[in-house]
Amino acid sequence: MLSSRSKSNPGGSRSNDGPGRDSHKSGESTETGSNHHASDGELLTDQASRPIVRAPVQVGLLTVLVIGIAVVAYFALFSSRPGTTGALPFELRTGAVAPDFELADVKTGEPVKLSALRGRPVWINFWATWCPPCRAEMPLIQEKYTEYRDRGLAVVGIDMREDPAEVRAFTNANSFEWTFVVDSDGQVTNRYFMSGIPMHVFIDADGVIQAVYVGDLQASAMDQFLARIIN
Image (cartoon, rainbow, N blue to C red):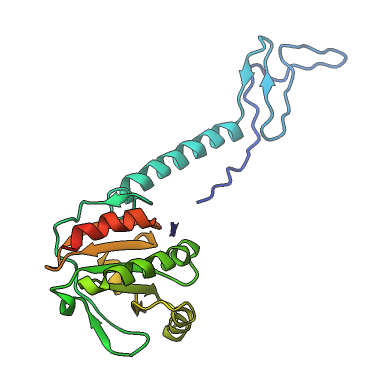
């Protein structure tokens, strides 16, 4: 699956906080009061050989902590969004009516309105020509469309903001026969909470979502999801 899926540079600081002050006298040296000079990140020891951790290490640990909190917050936020579990079926929206949309067919220019397909099972596939897993599964989608279209199946491929002419050329060159539209402004994508492609939405004849899947599908999984929407 493709998604869209902070850097920090903790600057070192130089400080001398070891025990003892300068106590050098002419011709005399003392271990207890010796000055310690450290470059950034250097480990100093006092007379008891106790490590003195310098500021850069402390800042580094703080940075790691902040990044860790950010990562946890990221997954806590996006794991609660519909469809964000890559390559796993997402069922929280099962039973909801699919959001309606109207987009132009890239081959005919005619409007394609989801609600106008009521009475037929609908398979929506969010994809793009630049998405390798999307392209890889499209021959299988063609096979399933050929197998089930006599039973009323409608397949709508929603491309992600590409040039309609480019999408038309790609689908014609590969002999893909289902309906293709382009979500040029991203409004349909936002309404379906799409977080990655390919993404599949399976809708029954009453317009109710029966399954959503983020990631590329194998033939057996396609059959399982289609069985939910085709009588």
